[in-house]
Amino acid sequence: MNYLSTRGAGAGERHTFSEILLGGLAKDGGLYLPADYPRVTPDELTRWRTLPYADLAFEILSKFCDDIPADDLRALTRKTYTAATYCNVRDDESAAQITPLKTLGVEDGAPLSLLELSNGPTLAFKDMAMQLIGNLFEYALAKHGETLNILGATSGDTGSAAEYAMRGKKGIRVFMLSPHNKMSAFQTAQMYSLQDPNIFNLAVQGVFDDAQDIVKAVSNDHAFKAKYKIGTVNSINWARVVAQVVYYFKGYFAATKSNAERVSFTVPSGNFGNVCAGHIARMMGLPIEKLVVATNENDVLDEFFRTGIYRVRKAAETYHTSSPSMDISKASNFERFVYDLLGRDPARVLQLFRDVEEKGGFDLAASGDFARVREFGFVSGSSSHDTRVDTIRDVFQRYDTMIDTHTADGVKVAREHLQSGIPMIVLETAQPIKFGETIREALLREPERPAAFSGLESLPQRFEVVPADAQRVKDFIVANTGE
Ligand SMILES: *Cc1c(COP(=O)(O)O)cnc(C)c1O
Image 1 (cartoon, rainbow, N blue to C red):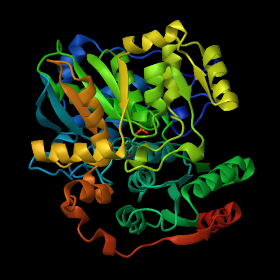
Image 2 (image 1 turned 180 degrees about the vertical axis):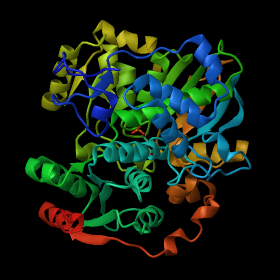
Image 3 (image 1 turned 135 degrees about the vertical axis):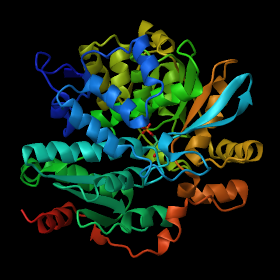
């Protein structure tokens, strides 16, 4: 399997899965995609229908990754997707399913269900990919006798998923910057209570953007970056995207009895990583009817899928909402879809994303390409705080099921796109306990707390407070890498 950049640089070069695994952007600023999407045959679909999650993951990853020996790859997926890791199930359903499908009911003739992706260690869907990345990174580094220092900034979900994926991994350290005193008590405790010696929490005296700026400043110091082997695990990482393809197949099998049936998925979206994986599953031949992109008040993506205009927002125009993991000003994985939408024309992608940098966006409304958005199955909608709270209340009253704020945005938008006879699967991206304030507002009661998390906030915490100063963060890295 050969990988190329959406912006076309080095068109004649070959890049393997393992080569792009530890990297981020391609040299030309584009994103990596496979040269062709592997297709799934009807026989394969039939055979995969009954596979346990780990083996399904192996089959799908094998199609994208031909430079890790099959036995090693299978061992990695089996080590990653265990019932012990995805044990935070709420009902008496089986953790062995990894991503159980919870049926809500039938609305407008369409079976409506939730695909639970948040039963992992940090109770958000990012664990699904990040846990695999942790094992893949450890494997790849050991093979080449290398080490990696992961530097990141987080306002919550991504940072904790990365830390829980990398804790105790050989050859890897994590330096995670978070805004001091700005996260919820639960999210702070999740990260800061980790005592693993390879995990470093840095509480930056400032806001999230200050933490992000420090990461950029350190990464732009190329000499420092090379000497201290600084890397990242952000949402554009290809392996993260491909790991997410797996649960679309798993969800499809759980919601159908035969491969003649079609289903739709609704995906609470921010950086477009999750729904990009759905697009790839569909390109592989999974019978997906619609991919419904659900946004919150930060409706960059909804605007595009309704109008053909992609207009990134300035930091000051980005709302802080009650579904904060979808508070984005631009969608970092969107370029992968645009590349396919434009018939895989790298010169046009390059031009459009130059327009994004120089003019703040682009307009495809008048071009024939935008009409093709529906051929790719995409539709969209957005939510607000009021509809979010109403949806949490409604789903609780009607189905006795407590959902988090992001999933509520999904259910709200899914309901606008139901088709009789076609199952609608909403991806559940987090558990309610992570966003307790809004649950209390909606339901006047406490969110459900998985047993393993009782007393989390009173565990001892390990973190370092640092000023919003890149040099101080570099000093900390130097002092703690022993290199
Ligand atoms: C990250 C996240 C999202 C958005 O996912 P993208 O891949 O960025 O579109 C939605 N919900 C939750 C809870 C998240 O953590």
